[in-house]
Length: 68
Image (cartoon, rainbow, N blue to C red):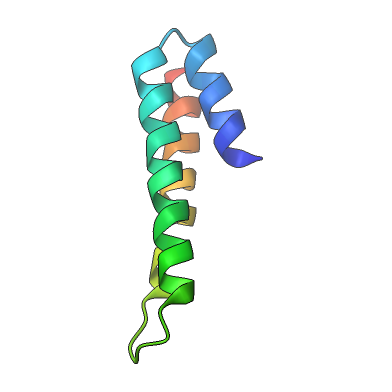
């Protein structure tokens, strides 16, 4: 799981606040995905939320790799 790996890396790097923020961003992204999936209105942005979540995971992973 990329989020869990990101959080573990941040915790091991001594950055508990960033690990918590990573967790919170993941929870918000998941909530937005659920809400967007349930919205049957035209122009739903469910795909954009998923892409944003994926990109945020990549950014967090790259930041963790750079800080090591």
